[in-house]
Amino acid sequence: MIADLHTHTNASDGILRPHELVSRAKLHGVELLAITDHDTTDGIIEAQLTAQKEKIAFVAGIEFSCQWQGKGIHIVGLNIDIRNAQLQEAIAKQKATRQARAELIAERLAKAGFDGTLEGAKAIAGNAEIGRPHFAQFMVEKGFVRSAEQAFKRYLGNGKIGDVKQGWPEFDEIAPVIRTAGGRAVLAHPDKYKLTRSKLRVCLADFVAAGGEGIEVISGQQTPNITRNMAQLCERFNLLASCGSDFHHPNAGWQALGRCGKLPEDLMPVWHDWENLPVH
Ligand code: AMP
Ligand code: MN
Ligand code: MN
Ligand code: MN
Image (cartoon, rainbow, N blue to C red; front, top):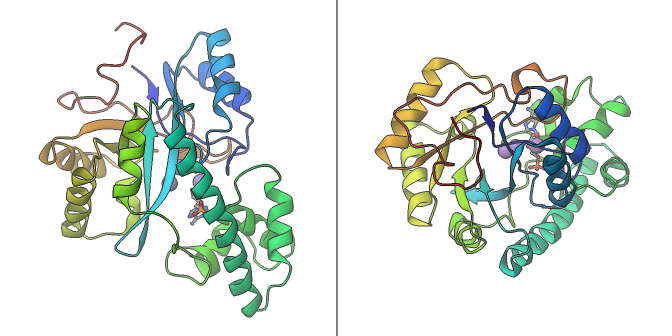
């Protein structure tokens, strides 16, 4: 099964419209797709309609911004019922947090000598959930930095002035909401947090205690070594295995749609009991 269970549309910080993403996934041979925009389900209905037309198996998803021990950690919710009231309540709260956070990011950037970033980032985000990538793009357009990569490295990335995490919920606020909405909570891209191996184990133990059920054993195009390590953690914590490209835009080769490789055979995939999947 070629599954891609972590992708972004222009409802958050991706480039493609939901219907474009679904069609592109189909074209690239994806058999099971989830859209997991940051803190919003706004792209899901359009995607579901296109998936029906294109005959590609699709589940609704979301990527929740959380924090754990002062670090920004992402939890993906898969196969959720987007009409669930508690889920939408949690999303409304995230939206408010995102707005307040954008103001704080702009204030901090202003102190560093960069003016007008709130208005600039908002204009770029449009109807999408505003995030650091919109600030990065504005800073590139203004010539404050050479590239988005540089904006993150200097001002927006882990531990930099624009890395605002306060306000994001802890795992135990989010994992139960995902479950209530009929979905599964999956720890996103565990290798990306720069946690030591022992810290990552503590993080996973807390995640499981909060109701987490899965882990992304594969995120994008990663080395076999990382896959082995993540597979070990998956087994150790008795978790279900997920995989996703974390696709945002067509030009980022290491996050190409559907290119996340096959999960190790001995793991139980997160989709093992989902209905209406293609037969293999
Ligand atoms: P936010 O949702 O505001 O916390 O922004 C997080 C998003 O920024 C991630 O989902 C990525 O899409 C993007 N991002 C994080 N780190 C980098 C980086 N070093 N370069 C480019 N984009 C990044
Ligand atoms: Mn993103
Ligand atoms: Mn993420
Ligand atoms: Mn993502």
